[in-house]
Length: 619
Image (cartoon, rainbow, N blue to C red; front, side, top):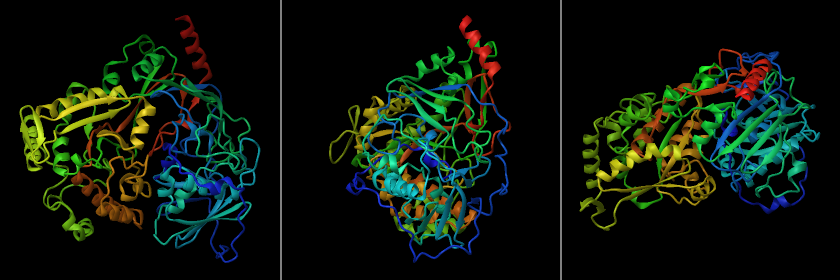
């Protein structure tokens, strides 16, 4: 998954070995050397990368973009108490991955190709059992120390052993990491034939060994850690803001993968507890940039002076990736959700047509696949190679999976949906007693509490709970601050919550953290629902090992179909685009890259910024 690591803020388990001094790793004389393998400038998941070895910049950037200015945006959700985004403890600040470089950099204009960043070249074994990276001699951390192969080894072992369990799952098939010399690092892989593994090891954030080896990596901290990236931490004010400033001495600013990017001098994240207050701050010019996730605001909310005067612009950027799955997630660790008929019944209480008409101005489409808007989405009945993948598991799958098509053909009219839901609940052993739905054997009423930290989801949740109440289900909403929310998720202390599962055009190792049994009981894994299913485990393993585009598509469809029939969550909706509002001081090259907007390619137009500031002062 190309950009997974920059979006995850994850966690740690202590290992006393890391309290000991770090010993440099010697070259392994038994390791087969690689003189016969050519050194290349980039790699692609399939075929070859599009850009030649002598490319000067990514096609979507302006290599002459000016530098300067500030971009201020909101971080909604309370506060933060850590500047370490790699561990489980604490709440990390927004934007921290701006300070770190990785071995390679992805091109947003390609589905999954990477080019050298910290690494100037790489050698991939034709059998994909190992990869070597040659580090650039000029690569430096922000304190001036060189980036070495020993830093790479240290970072890998630190993150996989003391970092968030995500890293252990993501890199589970890396057998060893060796510093062959000061500038060459080698990754050896287990024999699992994961096609993407050589590329995703290049996404490893490289941390400075000399800085961290004397510190407790697992403890939250507010220190301004050094990285090797284009920005450094300039200001830390917990509860209020964190500020990053462009490093004028950034070692990589003239590299082809960086030229024309990271042009804005200061990136500011102001913290707000409520998105409505953040919206007012944007309208007042306190914030420069916002992603507008509210359809109502987008439809009717921009009738304010700055927008009418042309000082504020709106952009709708098409999504080049599969639609993100956002959903109400069941906690399958709780007995009341063990029966799939109960989960299917509860999913029928989510009345999307009413929400879309009354709250969303018909701006959304219902999400009906875990790989929505891609050729990986299951449809109809299983057949051909997909059926062959599922057939060995027939006795562990519902027969409906083989007999009824997807998307599910549930009634659209609410009354019919609730009638079907009640039938399913009765089949599962529930009965109506007075105004409550109780289990016939245990006498326990069916209750549902939805855990939230964002009041914006309350208006989506309440109609569903009202529909549940019509069935005799007692529902409630519990809204807590972000720290309490994260702590409850880590303890699996919830009935239902809202989860998000972003997908790329090339799903792979990150699927382990989403769906597999190994992640089900790991605190802060992405497997919020606690799904532990041998069929899913097998399909995820096959997906990771897919050796062609067609094999990946077929396996993803089978996985999608199984997940849909397990009903582990209640899917929400999607728009197929990202809605952005900005104060009109920014410029960017067009068109946007096909597979994701690259905000790093933007710059501030100094004249427009000055004009806007002058207009705001006059107000």
